[in-house]
Length: 178
Image (cartoon, rainbow, N blue to C red; front, side, top):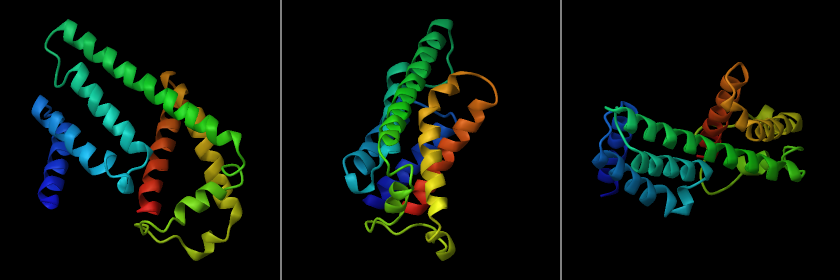
């Protein structure tokens, strides 16, 4: 049953990614995402809640290619509300991290990759494990990217840099924390 539901989840995700969105596909993905990631805290971390929110906005504000101007406007409103929500989430997450010392000295990153609940998908090289400045740099970059996330609303060089940093941060989380 789990493999069947996981296959359905992946299929719906690919359909959504390819733009083959329907109410049934998005609703199925919304439900399965909740079952796999939100209701089971073992597999969940912050990005899962953002994905669930994105699916909710997709359900609420429309799907597919808009046929008329009013639907296009409604979808644009949903898109901007989701971007605004992401801006608040990342900014305040970064602000909270900036208040303590664990992210500035790298301790938070080091502790995160040493969690025993899931093995990493990639092995962290021994040479890097003992380099405190490496962990410090990753912690500082995390704080900077999260606090500066609201700047993605401004077109220019900063936008792709911040988005790339945030994506790489989440890829790193996935690879190092299993």
